[in-house]
Length: 378
Ligand SMILES: *Cc1c(COP(=O)(O)O)cnc(C)c1O
Image 1 (cartoon, rainbow, N blue to C red):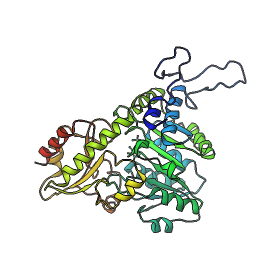
Image 2: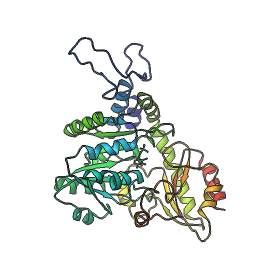
Image 3: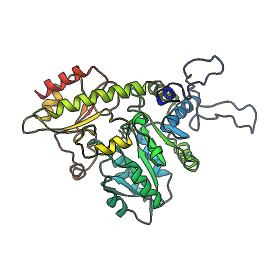
Image 4: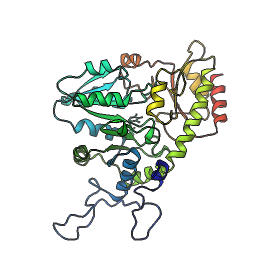
């Protein structure tokens, strides 16, 4: 089955009784035992639920894994990974990862003895140099947020394997439609399904996916024990959204390419970050490991010529909002919004400034989007 077909069909068929074409929602918190001692397939919804299982099957298939858990949020999926490690773990991560993940890694988990090194993940020597005896995992996020730097997934995964380390990749930005880290040697994939997988900005959710049975067991224990799983209603919404992943991603990509090209020639734009440009430093790598460039475009406004607040204030179709991956276009200022939880020094090091704008390009008609950006730039 090809991805578009799998997105429509896998896991969906859960109604033996009425043979409904879509998956029923089973909100039941608990399920009857037929008799004492005979544990049914589902006994309690924190541990397992038929609607959620439908989504899990679908997502595992899309990523090329064999096991998935749908979590309450993307951060719940991210959290499941370090919780699976042994005591005293050290983790290596990129310095330009999602702000919420950075906060978890930098501010919360160190309280419990988990330590982190943040490196430039594009520099393999830096990654190698950060490995310590207690290192257990390398955390990959690519393209990075918000500047869309690309990490060589296969190279990092190989380096990790040689050093006996696990790898996890946050695949939220491209979705399995454009990138499949498990096929490149990564052990675990996490998602914020809030973004492209659901695609309609009406649910927060996450997923953790693997093709390794031993890791599935450890992650499954964490998700059940810590209570990280998502609700059946949310699972149903994401399953409905994911069916159109293919056509949506194609439209996002087409529009993002048009937006990037438009911004690049605009005199009030100092710089555009888009891996689809042939002269983007990671363009060849992106072509190799991705099957598309995605729907995200970031830019630096020329703040001598335009005030960021004026630009944001004039946008009409691009809503000033955090998040990404929905059918509607969004614009945000990482400095004060998505990356505000990063210390100022860390933001500067990652290349984020007050003039940086992150666009999540939606699936509207591209001419309307270009007109909107044009009038907002003035
Ligand atoms: C949004 C996001 C998350 C967190 O997901 P939530 O659903 O908001 O908890 C993690 N990683 C990336 C790359 C994201 O964009």
